[in-house]
Image: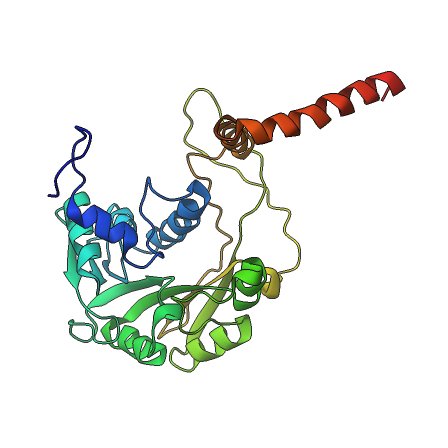
Length: 291
C-alpha cells in the first residue's frame, strides 16, 4: 500500500490503478448511478439464462457482473486482460463457484465447448480483432449454449458525444444492421434486443410481496434511436423472446435528481444565487397574473 495522507486510511494501489486504467472501467460506488445501472441491467438480463450453467464473463472488468451471474450459475469464470481489473475482482468478489483469470478475449485459454453461456458486455467495440473474438466465443460455447453480447449504438453514441469527438477507447462501433450481420455470419441463430433507459412509475407494497406485474406501452422498435444493442446468439434455434424490465434499487429518479441538484447548489453558491433570483421573480409575476 502507498503511504497515507492527512491521517486517512491509504487506498490499496490496485484501486487507484483500476480507476485510472482506461477511463472506461465501471466500478461500483465510483461511477454515476445511471451508468452503473445500465451495466447491471445487462447482467440481470443474462442471469435468467445462467441458472445451473457453466458461464464465461469475457472482459469482466471489475468483476461485479461476474458476481451477479454467480448467484444463479453452477460456475463462473471472469476473464480480463488487465491485471489491475483481475486483482480488484479477486479481492472484492469471492464465491466458491467464481474465479477470475487474466486472459485475452481473442485467445481464450479454455477448451472447445467449455461453457453453456458466454457473455461479453461492452467489449466487442474495444477489440482490434473483434471477428476473431466472435470465433473464439463460438469455439468455447457448448453445442446447446448461448452467447450474449452488447455494444453501444454507433448512431446514438455519436450524437450524444457531440463535439467531444470519438471515444478513444473504441476501435469499432456498430450500427444495428452491421451488428446483426456480423453476428449472423458466425452464429446461425441470433435474437436482437434494444436496451434503453425509460421513464416509469412503480407501485411498491409497503409489506413485502412475491409477485410483480408490469404494463409496457411499447411503440415500434427504433434501432437507430436506441442506446445499446444486445444479442443472444446460439448454434441452435432458441425459444422465447421476452421483453425484460430491470428496476434498480435506486429507482426514485426524481428524488435522485433533486438530491443531485441540491448538491450542485451547495457547491456553487454564487451561481445558484443567480438562478434563484429569476425563479422568485417568475413566481411573483405568476402570482400577480393569477396563473
